[in-house]
Amino acid sequence: MARRWTNDLTHTDVTPERVFLNRRQLIAGLGAGSIMAAAGRVRAQETLDPNDYEDITNYCNYYEFGTGKTDPAENAHMLTTEPWSVTIDGMVERPGEYALQDILDKMTIEERIYRFRCVEAWSMVVPWNGFELADLIQMAGVREGAKYVAFETVLRRDEMPGVKYPVLEWPYVEGLRLDEAMHPLTLMATGLYGKPLPNQNGAPLRLVVPWKYGFKSIKSIVRITLTDQEPPTSWNKANAREYGFYSNVNPEVDHPRWSQATERPLGGGLFSRRKPTLMFNGYDEVASLYDGMDLKANF
Ligand code: MTE
Image (cartoon, rainbow, N blue to C red; front, side, top):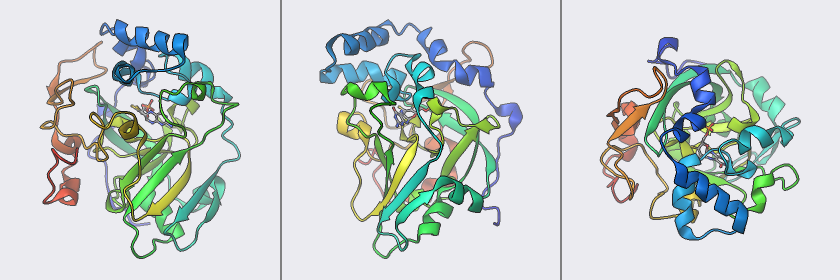
């Protein structure tokens, strides 16, 4: 397969793995007492009022395993990731249930070092291993008229203790426009830091879209559906005012409750200085996908 994209970042830019793995504890050090309080309330009441979503988004991670900062690390081992298959359906030529092993046999796994910008305004540089989503979609064949791609996370009540809490609607769902999905930057990740994906980071297969905020990276994907309708996304369903369909990194469009103009890179000291956030997280090559669109309205 011809190389369609090359890293501009190198291993010297990478956020230390230790920082990546412990970032939730580091972020907690920023004085996020209200977040822990919110997580406690979820357990106590088992229900949520809309304001609780605001606090909880600060620990976005893998809510199927719980909303506490260490829950995914403690519970995600319960997920069986082998064997795994992905159903590809909707407006495709060859719909069906594809065994992950068969997919991997056909794909070229490469390393991509990407900037990763979370909606809470911290950032990292992460080395992912994976293949281009475009190659997987092409395997199934795009049918005339398809405009969007919908994604779904596995839902296993017996393996996912967090899904008994209605913090989000389950299963977790995400979506991209077809041209976004087909862009060579859009990665299906199978590993990070040169190792297989840990369960808490979305094993065995997760999405990485480096010009969008981190919450678009849906984990443990079991279904990919091509459609002509804009698909629903979990965070938009939970709080449409704060989370739009596009979720492009954009320093000019603030989150309703905080500025998105700057970010705090994790690593290199406990917390390095804030730096300006770049449009599309610095991935200028995707700008043409949005020519003529009002990105304040389509946030
Ligand atoms: N995917 C599923 N299925 N469930 C989740 O709760 N959280 C999202 C995203 N994907 C989430 C998910 C959010 S809010 C973020 S910030 C990223 O995963 C975090 O991924 P990471 O922990 O690997 O950085």
